[in-house]
Image (cartoon, rainbow over all chains, first blue to last red):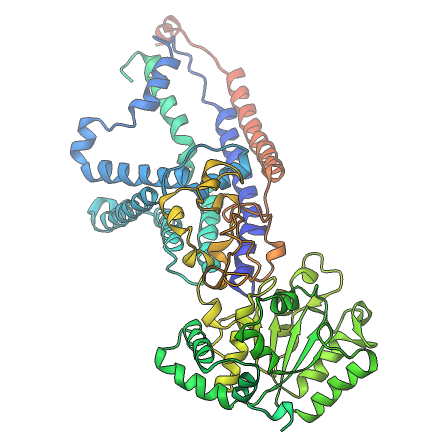
Length: 220
Length: 366
């Protein structure tokens, strides 16, 4: 990697191959572990079905209940803003869709670049706000671990490097694009082994909660 | 006065170039090189007095496309004449002499202008560790010929991507062990004029700069003149507004292509390519690849042959494919499955050991 173009080709070639392989291996190992182990058998007689309440909870938990919102409005609002922003940027930016198409063989329509650009800027501001909040909130500060900061760091880096590459702030461009791809690859590698796994396990966990409530006959 | 001793101004007048035409060229050169207009008289004065430098042009592992680009430029133009008035003492394709006479001309020019001639190279060459027989001229290996010529050169201009970065001959698997001029020449100034082929005006512009200032222009990290390679194709592309609006052609004959929308999704490498095509254009400023509806291949960048498909968008990785992901996924499934199977075994064992107790039994015990 003696020059920017070498660096870019490395990130698009061998580095991507390693990152996607570690991601696929790690994620499948973890998901399969979760599914196959299952839960300890519950011998109590079920009072109601599991599937309905389970599926319902997958969606209803997306909206915070009034109590949670009242006690932590910042978490709910800013959390929503940057999560939605991140997903829009990841899944609706045309160059990302071309990447998805090359891997999966299909893609979906994207958004115009200026829209994605605006969403990216909002996401970045919201992400900075979450860090400030974490560093200043007495309870959050105390319960934050190194992993929390590493995960915030890599998430922020992916979005920031993409924003800088799009606006061609870093020169030459192969270096800017290479940095963005590399940070996305680090994100992919960390994903199965940190709390970033929630991208895939949130749905499972919510279903389990709902199903468990349903089985016991309480509101899910 | 012999031809070689004439100043550029005298030669141009002899060729019927008017003062007005000459100054126009000087102004174009100044703007091309991003110099202030106040520099135009200085350029004109310097060029007027410039002696025709001896130029030796060596062609190695190349396709002659660079020479074609230069010579097939519209004619007659001031640029052509500038070249004409350079004392081009050795050039395989263009010189009349052949065989021993040609080599003698080269040797004579090198001897007479030792320390002051400009060496232009097009094509890559087998490195010092490669079989020298892959490419020879008059029985001399490319490597020996280059090193001998470099010794007395004032500067070396590597014309074309092959000479600048290795180009096609150096593409994977690089059967001839091809290297660039920059890889071999360390003790002389090397200027890279990359492109496959380079824009003719860029070649003549670099020569004009050398004649004017007696030194090479400001270079980027790839030793390319910043005046021509300082901005990317994407930044100067007339289709850029479509990129900014998110309007893309998705195939070569769809409505977007007909409307002249951005070619990013068809594999345009404009964002990562630094060259002057978008501003200078080709064929007397008639058009350039993107204007004719074809994405930029990124031909002025190192390793453009090995950077994945010309028609794959810039964001598409060259490495992984479905097979890699599948293999990794299967391995992950096996690992996860094994861990889970162990845990499940434990759960089953616990279930087997389960001793249910009814309420009646409990009451009896108490």
